Image 1 (cartoon, helix red, strand yellow):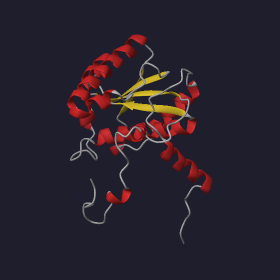
Image 2 (spheres, rainbow, N blue to C red; image 1 turned 90 degrees about the horizontal axis):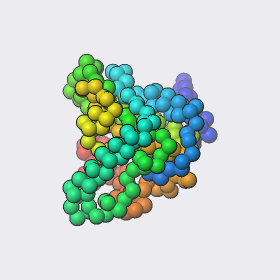
Image 3 (cartoon, one colour; image 1 turned 60 degrees about the horizontal axis):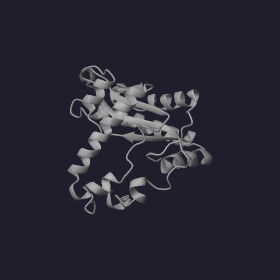
Length: 218
């Protein structure tokens, strides 16, 4: 006899809505995020799956205006370097809004913990599974944020060593994200880079195949 462990139709629809309407946000309102909501988002992140149950994520809340500005300057520097590395697309890249560090009411730095080398389960041949685990935590926060009406933007344009020094991260740790969070006027209808023509979503059928590498993928 089969067991039905599925959510109700309404609950399923809510889960899929959060997935399909999640956006990497760059525009924020100044309204504060209620503390109880912020705690729920952190709890959602902390309930992410992690390889070997290592829970590698560490969160640092940025409440200092000085630190916020220092992080923003790091991103500004990397933005220029990225534009130079993009060559002919550099000018188009500079026209994009890639973060909301100075505007968002909630700013967090997420890092991988130090001493991760002690966690071998699931990482002996794939040590970057710590990064995958922490990415799941951010995705949980993203989806919970969408359900709560809170936008989140993941910023990765920075030197992780210098960012770690700014927050006093221990040796062996690794900063992997600056997270901008806050209320938004509206969530983007489509991913911003899609709507601005930077790239487009691939057709799913070109990315999926049985037994062998998809031949039509790009």
